[in-house]
Length: 363
Image (cartoon, helix red, strand yellow):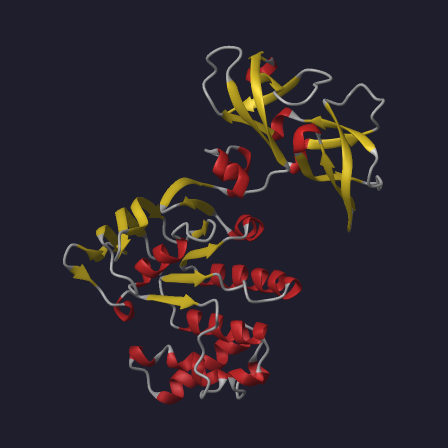
């Protein structure tokens, strides 16, 4: 049965006054796959460790399945929180074979040894490792070890699964395959899942809901589509993927509720419109234009449909075409500009910006 999680004004302050979490509040509905996304130092690992009971909280309250597990004088230890964890470094017992590593998670349930091993074997079969059940962790690849860790997390049928960047130690191809496996297996278990990562693409691919953390605070919570289309702050926009950003002046209101803006350091060839993340107060206001990679198009410099001119600084082949880095004047670079054909380094090009992928924030 999936557990609901409630975090109410949670703070964690380490000795010396280092604030890791600051009055963070969050509700996770039963069965939700929540991904906490943020850079190093944002507090996502600390939050996961507080949920697990590994860290004692400084203030606030954590409730799991209507039971207060942390808050005030209460601190329920990890083994009594009905949760399991999938670790970044696998955390397998090196002296136990794969089957016994998985079966170890069932010891606290009081099952007899043969039943534990039977259930462990069935779970290893589910993750595709039945043939490797008698191998030690040192005899398994990184991906195989992570599958054992996943089997161990799932075998106890806990209501809450915590995942501590479980894919970060794997190579790119294996990481993608394991992402699909984790998503399918965890969702089939029905458990509530809290998964942390610094990888925006991984977060968007896995999550029902994404929470973005910045310096110990939850700055936005929503679906992957909401986070990408309508970032609450410039920080969220940057962390979830930008081609670039430009200081701009607001020239007026544009069509469909957009703002007409003008870059302050670049010659504009035609009117540039963007969606607004600020209250329009008048022309001349300074602001910041953030640009998603999908909002940029490249064109020959002699065509009138471009907004700005630039010089191609770099080009990289991708499976569908080419991505270009384009330098504008005043040292500004726009990255990840896709085109089906290659434009050579040093060539002048025009750049056009679609309003739907451009967002204006207070400067």
